[in-house]
Each structure stands twice: as C-alpha cells, then as structure tokens.
Image (cartoon, one colour):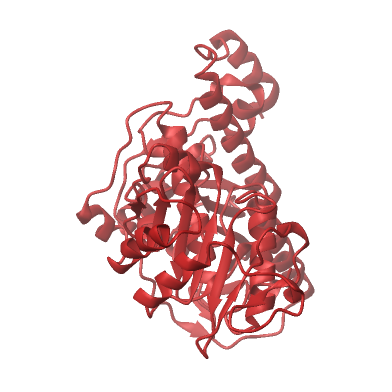
Length: 427
C-alpha cells in the first residue's frame, strides 16, 4: 500500500485505511467503520457488513449519492454525522475494535494518556461515552457530546473506541497511538503501580529542534543502499509492533561526520529511501526535517565511534517497565543476557538532560536504556544488531509480564551467568 496522503480520493483513502486497520488487528472483518468529510462537505463511508479485508474504492459509499455497488453506508453513520455537526475541525472519524481499547470499554473507563508526553500530545485527554444501542440517535448524542467538549479520542462503554482528526491520516495516527497507550497500561498493571507525568514534566519533555540545512545532493551507491536498509528495518519495526506509524526513530552512521535518520513526519509502515534525512556536519539536507530526537542520535555518535546504529521506540511490553519504574531483568535467558546485556532504567528527564544521561551511560557493556515515561534507546554496531536487540528486549519484557500469571520468574544462576560471559562475552 502506498503511503496515505491527505489529498487523494476519499474512497481510495478510506479503502486503504480500513484494510490497514483490519490487517493490523485493530478491528474485525465486518466490525468498525470509517467516514471522511471531503472539501465539498460530502461524507464518504465504509459500507455496512462488508469484509474489511476485501474492500476497494468502488465499495466506499458517498452518503448523498446512490451507490453503484449497491452497498449501504455504515449503520453507525448517525454518530459520525453528529460529530461532524458539532466539530467543524474534524473531517475524518474512525470507529474500531482494538483489543486494548475494547478492554477499557468493558471497564467503562479510558486509559490515561499522560504516561508518555508524545501519547498525550497526539491523543489529548480521552473521554468515555455512555452505553447506548448501536446505530441509535441516543448513541450519536452520547458520543458527539464528548467530541463537542473537545475530546478527540472517546471510549464507547461496552463497545470499543472512536477517534477523530482533521484528516484521515491524523485520525489513524490517533487510533494507533490510543491503542498503544491502552496496551502499555494493561501490561504495566500486571507488574506495578503506574507513574504519570505532571504538567511540568509534559512541558519539559517537548523537544523542538531547529537545525541548519545544506543543499540536497545525489546519493552515492553506499548511501542509497543504507537508505534502503533503514527503510527496511523501520518497516520491520512497524510490522513487528515495535513502532507505530508515527512514533519511533531509526538512524545509522554513514561516514565520519554524516548519519542518516528517519524523518519527523511520515508513515513508518510505508517509508521510502527519499524520506530519510541526511545529517552532515550537524546540518540537515534542505527541505527535510529529521526526527525530533536527532540531537540524541548525534550526541551518541560523537561520543561512541563504535556505535553504528541507534533506535528509539515505545513498544508496549518494554514501556510497561518504563511507566512503573520496574527493572527489566535480562538475566532470565541466555539470548537476552548475551545480546542485550544490562538495561539500566533511568528517570524521566528534560530533553537536554536526557541526551547527556543516555550518551554518558552507554558503554561496551551497556547498549540499551529505558527512560521512564519516555522510550527505550537501543544501539548497535549495525542496523541488524540494533534491531535484534530491540526485538529481544520486547520479547523478554513480554515473557516476564506473561510469567506473572504463572509464578515467580527466576534468573539464571550467577555460576551459569559467568559461564555465559566466558563463552560469549570475553574477547
């Protein structure tokens, strides 16, 4: 699927997004629905009771016109229309059934978004709409009233969730981020108390980047290959649930004074080589904006010549440790102990303080760090090694959390850890 753009045909855009939502497990085959209000005020809708995996642009219904396909618009159209009537700034609405948010709907509550500043920025403060019969005017009023109050993410009691945006890409971004938030909290609740950020901390974490530029140049064959590799690993991160379409960063060292990094905007699921931003002598190629974490990447590369790649991410299991302040013990399997090593948990910091703490904390024995209520920072001597470490950290975190329902996880004995060191880590 091509990267979703704001200005393409609404029918094509909706068909692409609903298939993506289904393939990513955020809704069921005939559950969920999408509408878009176009520039002329016309509302386009997914059809009722049609398999989301097979939808094409021809199946999408323009509400004010007779459908060529014979499909009817979604039965939930009333609440979509009610939202549009009360919010002139919203032009796209997504209703879906992701497992995490649906779990919160069963509890008649919404996940707190102030666990991570980026989640708070994207989703805002969510609300809960009282239960009403699907497709009813009462449900339309219940949901649209929460949107009228300014909420963009709403939990529907005993049902699922609905999000809105100025465009369909923005609404999709909110849905993915809202579900990520729900997943992190659900996992964290199994291992400890959840720590939220204060208003001052949310403000302090803002990382606005101003960087000089240099004229774009043709890529060398080496650079072209590295750009494609970064895209490949970024897409793998998305497909493995290690990053969302909007959150996470990947970079690699290109030369002594140059690196390549993912951009600040764009969809990681469909990132292309030309989207990657080159940083040379501290300047970015003109017309492109690097990920806001670029200063951290540059600081790490300057201090650690052996590091060739850096990834920042907020995966659901690892960040459960990050929002509870619990240590992630990698001494539980040979793979995590040997490949990842110790993973320090450092306190939440301002953007500048984080750069210093993380950069200085990395060493030959410390390749990864979890920053409380922020992200996990992973480094390596290649993109593959960095990616593998990120995969293993998340897999280890998942196993540790799942073990909570089975008993008490035991680390490898000190004697066996020493043998692992002697065999795999001693040079």
